[in-house]
Length: 216
Image 1 (cartoon, rainbow, N blue to C red):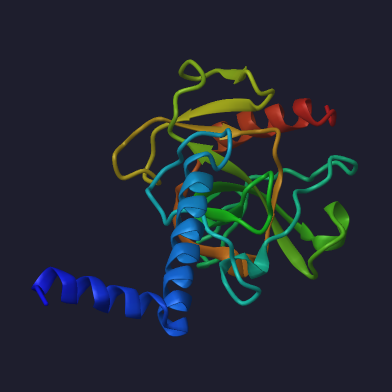
Image 2 (cartoon, rainbow, N blue to C red):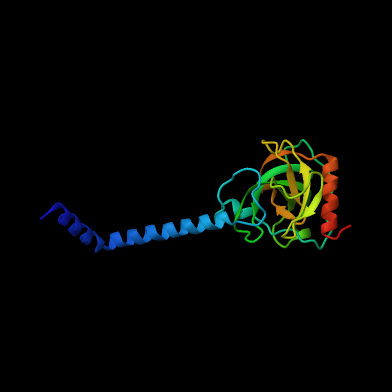
């Protein structure tokens, strides 16, 4: 029997093995899941790429980074906006920090992103989930959506406020803050501080937030 014939016979024998067939099916399923995650990550949100690369979006387990994900804050009750950064090692209003932020369309998925903390309040004031104090924050992006020093609404209805560049971005890129989406973050979801926004910049954003949510 030729070598080619022996190889063909060996492959046919292996193909009849239940263990081999299960292994092939498992590999196929794993490849399908990987492609699905990759496609979801490529289209994960209409807000554009934010500072940093971060890991590809992926489903999170109950004990993973998404365990602290909270629903966005309601606009029903006005938010107390006061610039109050402190050198205490904790995230305060006026500070830009990094934290795990869920996607607007799916709270079980998200990414590490820079956010501007604008307030701190009890979880029950602006939402129905979470407990104790929570941070209210606004996401940042380096994608150019407005002219320098201006506020504008994009084609999706999101309102962006230009804040220029600062220590929170190592590449020195101008940043913009989204004023219409109020994130609620558990303090333990914050990873590190990235910088501070001055009082004038904070007040400009606070004014935009009040206007967007009808608190002015």
